[in-house]
Length: 240
Image (cartoon, rainbow, N blue to C red; front, side, top):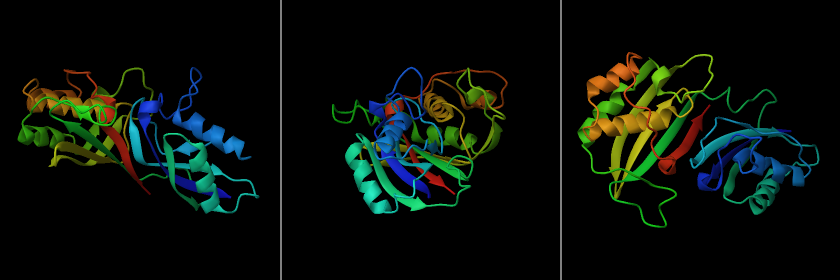
């Protein structure tokens, strides 16, 4: 049986989502180890990679079950007992050709930050930025909307077929004592979201101009390569 699972995880305990040769502390390695303990040798496919320290509330994976695993509710319960800092939210049957990454139509990321240092209990899950101009932040974020070549908002050393992506929505809003930034797109490049967030925040703090941000977005000149702190970033939802 081919199945899809929606999962959440606390990325502060892992070196990222993708399997790595240098460490076993990745989301993929942890889940695949739990599956093997249950007689499920299938590798997992994820909707996308997340960096070390980045979290998820709606990551999607797919894998294949042996015939003796038919009770998906029981499988979810047993896996959640085995997994640390990862939660299986739903498991559902899918067609054999489903692929969590290639079938995804849109992905939504949420960034959570405060303008004063987070408490001890928030430090791994909420980022910090000094006070800023919300109007200029939304102006900067709006520039990313539409189809662009994001070659200058890509972590160096990455290899891709194309660096063109379409961003359908990018905006900021306050939420009680926190600030939220949302990005919705057909896909993201490696570290693209963190680069865009920090670039927009630099505009909102008067460290960059809108013209400089536009020049970088147009691949004319690179003004910043700084990444937003990973603690505040969440893969919130994947749409199929």
